[in-house]
Image (cartoon, rainbow over the protein chains, first blue to last red):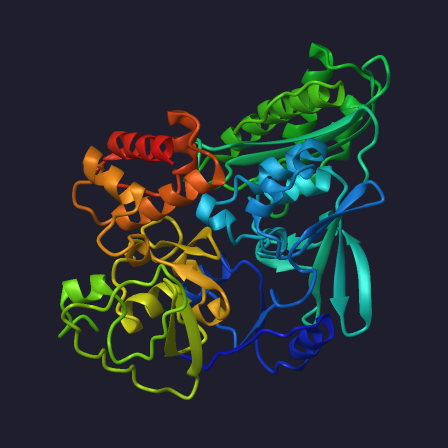
Amino acid sequence: MPSLNYVAPATVQEAVRLLAGASGLAKVLSGGTDLLVQLRSGRTRPELIVDTKKIPGIIGIREENGGFVIGAATPGMALFEHPTLKQTWPGVVEAANLIGSKQVQGRASLAGNLCNASPAADSVPAMIAAGATCLIAGSDGTRQAKVEDIVTGPGRTSLARDEFIVEFRLPKREPRSGDAYLRFIPRTEMDIAVVGCGVCVTLDANGVCTAARVVLGAVAPTPVLVPEAAAALVGHKLDDATLEMLDAAARRACNPIDDKRGTIDYRTKVAGVLARRTAAIAFNRASGGKSAGGH
Amino acid sequence: MAMQGLSRRGILGGTAAGLATIPLSGRAAPPAPDAPAAIPPPVRTPEMQDITLQVNGRRIALAVEPRTSLLDALREQAGLTGTKKGCDRGSCGACTVHVDGRRVLSCLTLAIRCQGHAVTTIEGLAIGEELHPMQAAFLEHDAFQCGYCTPGQIMSGAALIQEGHAGSPEEIREWMSGNICRCGAYPNIVAAIQTAASEG
């Protein structure tokens, strides 16, 4: 086995310096629930692991300007246990809490789920729907990016080799808005999405949608933001004709693979159905309902 | 295997002799009645780093490679074989331990990053001969058959009650969904957790 070094720097600058100075493959470690599996299987053979968890602020959640700042390595269970995050962005928290088992959620982080760059990552469509951004540190300082601009393909991201995500920002939620995430799997727990769908909508006083974001997971090489699906909702109430337009737009956005979890036809059909169901929950939440998410 | 020359009783009684152990708290296990032979130290490789883990209230000095999982460090080096290796890839829950009171999968946790954190394994739940309520409930309800998944089930069940998710059988099933039992002892496991929760 090639030699492997482990370093746990205490500052962002030191972490960036280590990543920039690595001669071979360097991997950023947050929760580690994907990286350790890949290390053991030999799928990844880094020469350096940079553990970010000693960096102050990389774990934790704080409210800022009505929104939330979530440290990149904050475990999913901490999102679930936060007193106000789930009330404000229930779709994001529900999506994060679908990742692996409860034990995995004691470790697994939003940054890891995003940068592992699986097309089926549960938290990513929900974060994109919510309009989340991330703060990225690198040799040239820090930059902000939209979450939808990070994943470029299965296992690939737009981050440079000396860059890593420091924190996520969830915006202040608009009045009369709501988000939701649903995934379809053949069982209720411990599985990988056949299709995932995140929706965030804003309504006017009459229940007419004024803004929407619809995101599909596991139906393309990356999570996909579907403006056509959002356009199907804007200007409409949640009636049958609107849902039919949403369903059709979601199906048109699909470019899935055939695998043991589902055929292309099956995934495409499920995407439309899941978009309907997710939108219904988001509309209900936006109009003040306490609709629970599901699986 | 590092098990050779060790007695099961000695392992259950506490940390293997031959390792520098310093009790840290009142929960420390009593000395082993028949101290096992020292575990032969692993062959030293250039990658190895010396670390100190705090396991079940004792400090344990180990030399580990960066890639060594907490599970392997506990089983192969600390002699704490109560934590089981099922899938070794985060799917089955048999290796569940607590780190700083939160349940995690020791197969998906690097030993090297557990320095400065409190690790509790199945060996650390009982106080002397007095079983943890979850252990007693598993015995009472016969909540296992082959027993291989049981340490993980018990560690998960104990954490689940601390997390406040033992409100109903449905809630228990969901929050125990990361622990797989191939014998299918689930009804008795849920019953045991309900009993332990009601006594808590």
